Amino acid sequence: MRFTSGTLLVTAICVSLAAQQNSKKAPAPGSSTPAHDSSPQSAKGPAITTPSGLRLEYDVEWRLIHAGTATLDERANWVQLKLESSGLVSSLFKVNDTYTANYDDPFCVTSSLLDSNEGKRHHETQVLYDRVQNHAFFVERDLPTNTVLRSTGVDIPVCVQDVLGAMLKLRTSPVEPGKSLQLFVSDGRRSASVKVEGQEREELHLPAGNYMTVRYEANLMNGVVYTRKGRVFAWVSEGAERRVVQLQFRMSFPVGTVTLQLHKQEPL
Image (cartoon, rainbow, N blue to C red; front, side, top):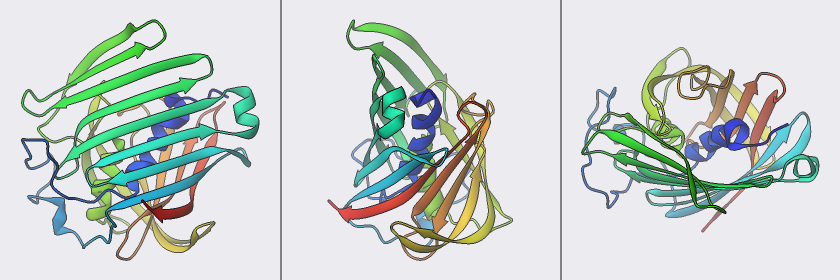
């Protein structure tokens, strides 16, 4: 199994995104109405109870074994996700990745940075989302040699979400089962309108507690934003906090199904 940003991390970022960013005004200029949103701000949804800083830890399971831990630190309009492999997965392919993203209101991504230590590889991927030029600039470097491996970009609307920002937007725009929401999502290389479908209510019994949730499916893969074939599901708790408590990626062989479950949470 290749436990990399192209397989688990990129999708694991989905969960952290969902976790806990609040909607305070960001210092970046140019805040405006997001594309594909009829309301001036997502804040028209229900009030979300969010502390000023929060750490959420998720257990990562692959093929019924503990594969690693995803830890999200959140403060205001800044989020950092750390993904670490463990156990058998580390013996096959060690991963220690850190993803950081900055946002402007309402959850418009302004920049992201991925520091990926995967096996013998150490790369840095930086994306600048320019809201003046309506363009994302993507640069990936090999850090040991300081070599640019890929430099590209894509046109974007004035407000776009990365995967994390899209989940944050979902938290403030609750979608009932049978309904759907369109969000504009970009990874710096591709940009697309993504459909998020509310499917059904489920009660989950997790290490962090018991939650009544709504299960959503986000159509991010299969060439929409990410080329890998698969399906992405998120379980969002009901109530004031509306937290993503479980995330599941059902991908083709050899990856298969990867599940992230909320293990614990604590204030920063």
